Image (cartoon, helix red, strand yellow):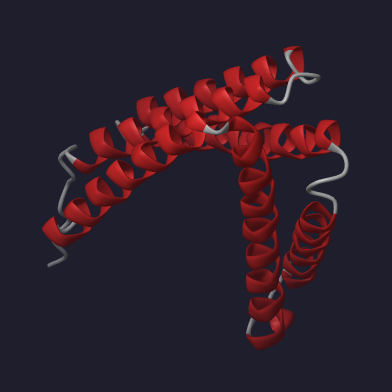
Length: 177
């Protein structure tokens, strides 16, 4: 990782911590912002997959899977942005689903990295555990809107701290001769 990328990662992490602390001050409004943000991110990722399919992946092996993932993400994001102020329990469910998928992906990445001998598996495992703890706590307190907001913000702070740690981790440079 270049020095510029390390500085950008640290600045992003500091911004994440600041935004999480601000959102914790106003949990009722923060819930709406988080719901809109999650919906927007899902929509953008869905569009990204669909555009990638249309421009490149339609001729690749497994390209239709990318189209399916893009359509599902786009649909989930659009649906989340439409109902953000109506069904708070459903929105907490969406946030839980996003973190559940993220934790499964982090666990899979940690398993793969450990098998490859990559020392980064510890950070992936820590992120997976953090995301899974968020899922459990949000499900326990699903009827209280403020508690999932605090849990989500603490998860963002946790992810930011891990991002700072990863930025200062030494990376191997591979020279090809």
